[in-house]
Length: 394
Length: 230
Ligand code: SF4
Ligand code: SF4
Image 1 (cartoon, chains in turn orange, cyan):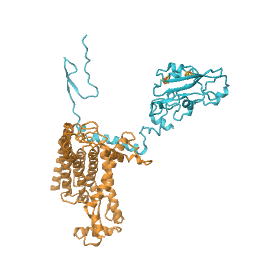
Image 2: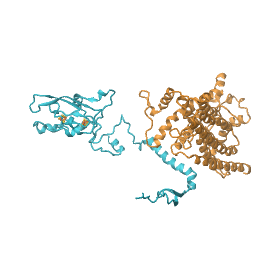
Image 3: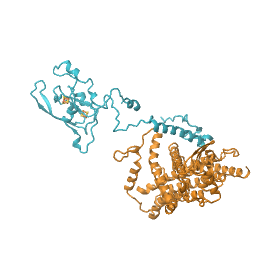
């Protein structure tokens, strides 16, 4: 039993569960959802034919067909390319995103000894406050559904995701192709410009919540939707909608960061020669998948920071409480509902990103830079300063 | 005469104001471009407006597929217009022999020279000739319909409503007499003094036999309308 618990509590297990049960399925489904959703938005049917015998599943199997196709393609390395870096670039594009997922709390803390009981919220809070969690029989061996809990949580995310930037630039350089190199430089200039606003937009939220640690942020937000990150500044006493502004700026910058339309000047698969023009087959597929994993990741960050993470509205540790009305639920039901809520929120924000991608036409590079440096950055800065001033004087 | 240049026109929708026009070449103009208004340049209202439209379509199509006009082709087929020219067929007499009298009108008129008829004699005095071989190379046929026009006795028609099938070998593209007879039906033209009643037995429109060929579906009808019909 102890061994089982320690295996379940190990970061590797959690990472495998998170990546292989949530992220990878979602990312591969997104490759299909993107085409099908865009079709629905444009009054078309979209890919609905891939099948294994009579099993069609509305065309979901298209991602299997795509994978098989990519595996079957020629793995071409252009002459003159830097072979080692050429091979490294796709890995550099996808691995940082997988690593960054470790800071995301994708579910609540599980107390394996009281799975089928209603948790006593009062005792739990006492135990946490007195740091006597492991001494309390019911709360021993807690499994936290967050892989890596560090003080500097979201800074870790920014630091790691900057590495993905190198993936694009190195891909362009290693291909030994001028157009790919230019594409790689476009990608890096765009990503660097938008990382600034992306980081600064969250600083206001950090100030309000007093923490950088995603798990603590989710705890700070609690199950009441009016206390979630987006609503910072909407309560009495905080006169500026800091949360909403931060959300809009972060979301815009994050879409630019994924290099997807309307900000897809670095690649623009069909029209613009981009940084992975020399890539084919599975190597190209990795870039493609990295993009979709990034979409999932950004949806997860937005969920965590602005929309209460795994919290279901009004669902506390021991059950629903709403305006004096209480419904007690056993711990395992609460846990499952919360993990499900996290998944659904992530799916929703993935959907929203695809919807935006299929709504807007591509920006011009000058519009992109203007939007990044002249609008988002000042707005993020002002938002940060307002949050700081409020935090000092209010 | 020197080429006259039209006075350069500013398109009505453009916000560019023409400041001056070069005399040497009126196409060269100085314009003052109106910058986008502030609410547009922030992109946010425009994005929300666009999202409202696309998301509306998304939910409408996901729930009802109401706006989707796509035809899932092999399962759903659009009916062809009444005068669609498809695969040839040979019409039959009342005793189910071929109506064609091998008059050679159709091979003569055929611009693609793709009809091969080898006539043979018959003992029937009223007919005298019949085609022993009647083949059309559907790969060479230009689907002009002149053979149908030329036929004096309603023996060949193109109203089968079928496409020439895809083939892997060129010789498979040749349709034979038997195949065309299999597609054929009785002509409503009365021959040899057969009585009125025989004609009454026949379907009024022989094209009714062909499933995706409906009356009153001319070109350009909105797809939704005819799909709901079927
Ligand atoms: S349709 Fe025209 S080309 Fe084809 S067989 Fe008849 S006459 Fe010849
Ligand atoms: S025109 Fe009519 S009757 Fe004459 S050969 Fe052709 S099909 Fe036969």
